[in-house]
Length: 315
Image 1: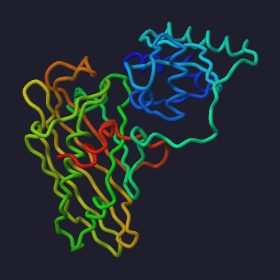
Image 2 (image 1 turned 90 degrees about the vertical axis):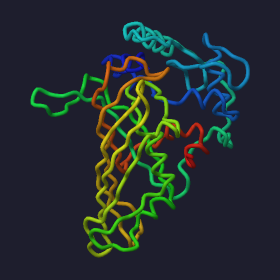
Image 3 (image 1 turned 180 degrees about the vertical axis):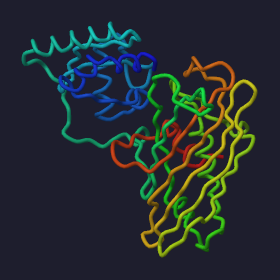
Image 4 (image 1 turned 180 degrees about the horizontal axis):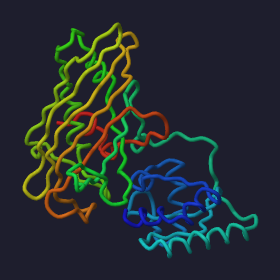
């Protein structure tokens, strides 16, 4: 993960990625396992490099691959030094410019995806973008961005029945709306995590020491209803945890019905790390997580949706 951060912070690599290549990002965990045309294409490209492996599955094939549309590998590297990665990209570009017509992989024009490793938001679901950022205290005591690292990004899926349950039966100011239990568990266990340095460990059910999220009708005018969200969570143990306050605003159109606004912030102190996101700051440190309705852009599946059943119906 550190290597990708350094590589794609290099101005020359960014320029070449935009102007000389068509950038594609995918999750190796899915790609190396899926038994369909896309998985076969990915493995055929990867098997031309040093991480060759027979059949679907197997060990990781993570890294930066540079290849033609026909599936011919021009370069590969998985390294944290941007200078080394820049040379790899430059060498691949030189090979492309010198390349003549060569053999290509047999790629079908369309295919049926392997549903075991194909993730799409369930029909009618509300998709929220999530942004996680390390924070630090400024001299005035206010919180500010810590370091130069971009925020970690993910998506939260709220099932249709869950967001419809947020429509108040009594849309009067002061009325309370109950949060569906599965939604609260999903949000807390899989999205209130520190993903700023790599793949975070998710919270086990017994690591949720307390979770409270209260929704109260704050405005009601015509078909527009606004809910004020407030609450707090205490997660983890002495070695690894997160304690945070929750605050936000949700707006709904009862005539649609639809959710027109969903802004939620978790702000608190995080400590500890997991096997795949080493390098945490020592002790407790400020961490902020933001949830909001996406405006546009690709909607990749949530990190935790690898275990789709456990994500949609967390115990």
